[in-house]
Image (tube, rainbow, N blue to C red; front, side):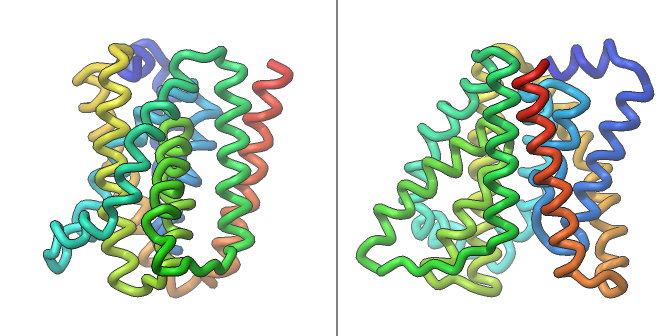
Length: 255
């Protein structure tokens, strides 16, 4: 599906897709997170929802591998994430079915609602705490919801990040578990999309190439990081994403 879109579209649309990926990388470079939150609404205004999700699958995976592997302790990190990963598996498969097998208008509405929810969570930044005895159960629920949002709109991270913070992680420990989760969820997302038979190895290859503009944006964003107040930039990004989500819902309702 993705390969067909790229092969049959105009150079102008390809350029706009690349620009959207650069902007998403720029946001990640400046504030450290948020690549799919920015990229998905931009891309989904140019192509259909499943194509946008597929295009983002490999950049999500490849951009997080270095942080996930940094410092070793991979097995320990995966064990700590076990409840989240167990819950994520059915969530991703159910989430992928929404844009692939439902009416495009419903897919747009569902995706737009996810974008608005994630942006609102980032804007409000709730501070929660999870009791140690509840970590397994809450992690299972967070993983399922994260997988669901990942399948619908390539945004598996935000809800799980809130859970990781709520169980007391910070600094490198948070970054490592968050990155490891994104790596595993991206692999599962790509697998679920490939199993639908609407995507093939050519789509994976194109998605892999899409990592390049994201990296360019990240490098530029890192250079701008000291010149732009990160908090102000984050709020502007979130507000723009909220508007993009509303546009997706509008498109689904009135298309």
